[in-house]
Amino acid sequence: MSDKEVILTPDGLKRLEEELETLKSVKRREVAERIKVAIGYGDISENSEYEDAKNEQAFIEGRIITLEKMLRNARIINSDEIVTDVVSIGVTVSVEDLEYGDVMEYLIVGTAESDPLNNKISNESPVGRAIIGKKIGTVVDVSVPAGVIQYKILDIRMK
Image (cartoon, rainbow, N blue to C red):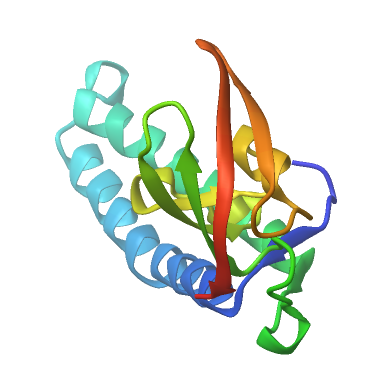
């Protein structure tokens, strides 16, 4: 990850800080204990518990480095910066799929916070890119692998 600015909402900042704290204070200790126990089993050259614990340790340390870099480069979007006359990071947007009539609601967030399963989409996602800066009533084309989807922006509001 480069030193690219990471845009976060206050909730996103809190979530990343909590994850970092958990990794540093809980997960590190747990994996260190697992390594210690695995070493107690003897020959580590053929010890799958040891290998699994070392792999988990490497993942945890990598994630800690990533989170620290993200937090160092974070720019927090505060509620007083959010406008609701156009789609921007921090707003909730209702859009209608013009082909099927389905209405979806998305919270627009920075990439670090995106969670499509919980309707938090990144400003850099295909839908996010298409609707950022647009007003209510605007119809946008979103390129997806299956073709092009047309969405009409129905509502923009604070989350």
